[in-house]
Length: 368
Image 1: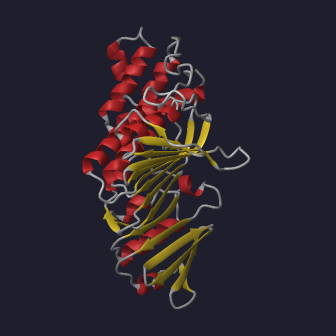
Image 2: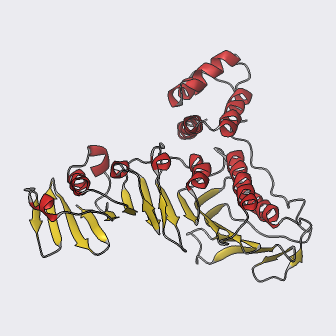
Image 3: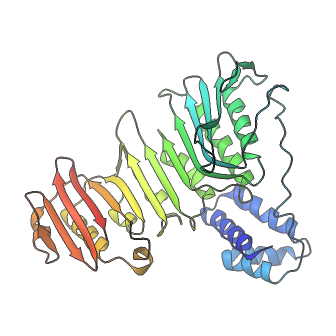
């Protein structure tokens, strides 16, 4: 096993343990025991509890065959619920998978990889619940044997994700129907989570997660399957009505380091602004900030730690604030210069931060 795969595997096992999610943790633990059958169970349990360093030690000190950790890609097959004549071609690398749930249908869009000549959809599936039929892009509807349209859509998603050495850059999950039954919604996310942990950490590479009309608890179901040591972007979008969201649980996970980005639209974040200090890029709305919190955040942008400022020079951060804003706090700081009636320029440490007060609140943008 090469060092890169070893380190990646260790990180991911450690992440699952960090989230204290019993199903993925037990799955990872069982994989480890299967890979190293000659090890004593007590020894494996000890290293398992040590996290990443412990796993590295196990791999470093054993010469056992680890092929069971990285099984040979299995041949792609048509799911038993799919019609025998329903054939489709899958890429080895997918740029984006979109799952849209609602209005008695599920849509699945699979985008081509960027290396192709065009980024048109590689495949488009429309699963109709009322007619119990499936349609692939450019082809007529075909009858499904599955009566549950959620199950049918997830079956297709499973087939896509069974492709060998799959690398998915982005996953977009949307609940389009406003009055979707809670049982249907819960069943969808529960099955989606089980499918993700079955693929993780062996053939799933997620870099971007876009959630539309999704609640915090549903984000937490998927977040553990993203490697925080890689570049990662989380987008949360609310279309119909602006919604307040306390993101403490999300922001307290291991994902928010110098490679992570957060973007929200239609969401008022109520957790403290300190949760965003370590993000590489932020475009969000924070609710009810005090003037001192705004000033402290500006100072934080000007005097970043080394791990943050070592990112490339195109690093940006833009945060819209809502709440009480007092200009005199910025005016009292020596690092701030007033440019016009509502804009300040703050400079220090080779970094420039522009603060603009407007009817929406406060916009802060920084650049080197």
